[in-house]
Image 1 (cartoon, rainbow, N blue to C red):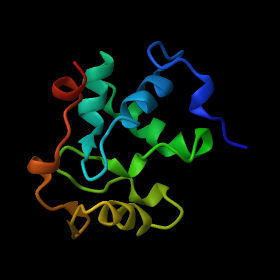
Image 2 (tube, helix red, strand yellow; image 1 turned 180 degrees about the vertical axis):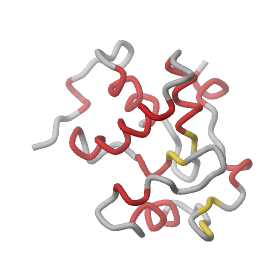
Image 3 (cartoon, one colour; image 1 turned 60 degrees about the horizontal axis):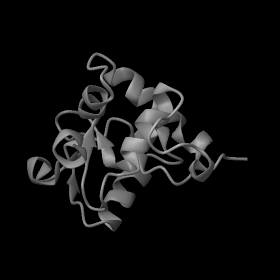
Length: 120
């Protein structure tokens, strides 16, 4: 059974994964961000890999977390193998209007969502 984020504090999450999930929940439909951008916004710029671990575990926490919107610094779908099937990440992005070619977000710079610019 997955937990709901509704019962958790929105502004002061208890742990790193929860802080990551609160940021990821704010990524708009049709936009993407990076592990590094999220790590920097949490105040832990060297923690990109931990953001990846949080994305890998997000389905255990809640099906509501749009982990498919988080890609690597080049716009590559490096986390695709952690979805139910490897094509699902691309399918979810494309269902939101994000074009993906060769496992990479087309127009990545245009679609990049920076938490620092959007949440501060």
